[in-house]
Image (cartoon, rainbow, N blue to C red; front, side):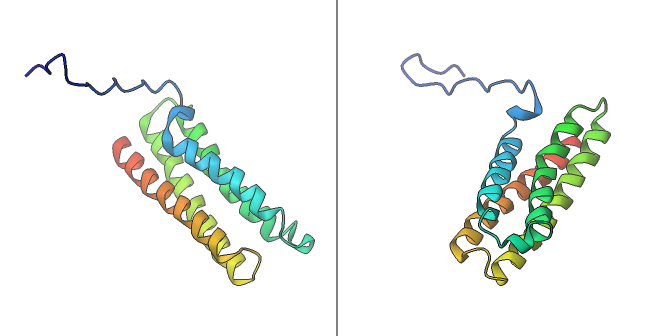
Length: 131
């Protein structure tokens, strides 16, 4: 059935040219940037502890998506999406710890946790799509 010319048609989806075009990659990158900002106020004594761990785990999410997207086979890509999911779980714990230690305000925790949960759901769907 053709859409009458007077009705609005949604734009054609933009083709994915690279992993960086994926919404999950963009959200994961945003999470890393937000966590760098949030951890900048952590105590200096945590610079090589929780601050470093949280930043590295968060950066691992989009980094593994990028590495997986550069692989030749879907199974390899799916493997790196799994690693990204593991890093997201690690970030979840570090966020909880930072909140409970009083380094992260409850509102910041909720905002970052919401973003992380959204990324986690998207990673699950991506892994399923690659199966």
